Length: 155
Image (cartoon, helix red, strand yellow):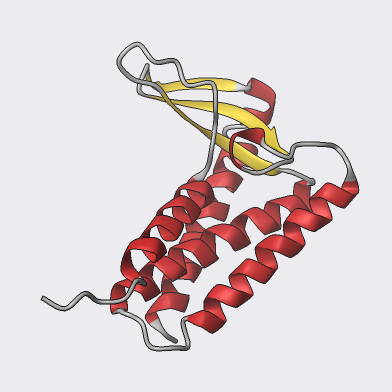
């Protein structure tokens, strides 16, 4: 199995395990908020029916299925794109993006929304948003792909 798929699998499993723990061990969906390392890290339950920061949120089943389809199309395209020559780092970031995207797809299928629970604040800034391991991986993967898939510049 290639490095990209191993990373995708690791991210997917870590994401799903963290959500299982939060939902079925901690019961954050009932508690709603737990101070872990205040004010820097808290668990704050949020069900996100949209994309990052709740954009495109809605209770419409059409929205849910469109977001699932887009995530699967992007995941498939990135996996196909990585069959072409790229720097090794690009494959690592592709794995992050793929694993994270699939983790959030599973949430939409199981719960109808993405389970977000990580909330970090610092230095007088009170962050109103929650996110999850998959969101971090998708964001890092997307940025990494932008940085590591450009043409190599000759010195």
